Length: 166
Image 1 (spheres, rainbow, N blue to C red):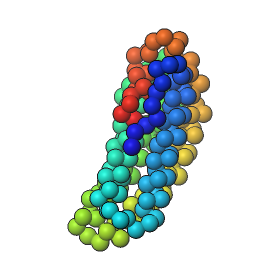
Image 2 (image 1 turned 30 degrees about the horizontal axis):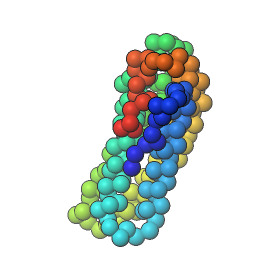
Image 3 (image 1 turned 180 degrees about the horizontal axis):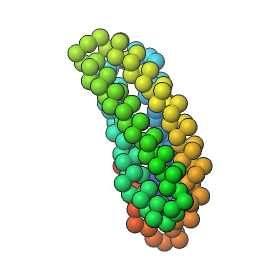
């Protein structure tokens, strides 16, 4: 489960890369939710997929909060309220991810069916929240991010958009 590869042949604008990462995260979440709808043939694979998705989403948001948002705040102080709202969303999403991880872990010691129902409910809520969050973030930040670089260098802090670990 790897994010879309970044091409060395041409430079893509940072805002476009953000949108591509969001598309990939949406696809992974949809796949995970589909996997939960069918009885898993190999519950361990489902657990790994679930935990991998949680880690990828957490890493994406941690990178934004720790690197990208401070860069944007410095260059665009008018975005501070937007970035603060996005960081609040990130904290809320992190709470959902913790609950998902706890439910997945409890499935090893309890009824896997009950845990799957709980995980599905959390992921359904997460999907709704992320649809809104990603759309807002893209609407408010993509153009600003596309203006960040000149295509020849990566501004400090924008490297979070180029991280293959997303």
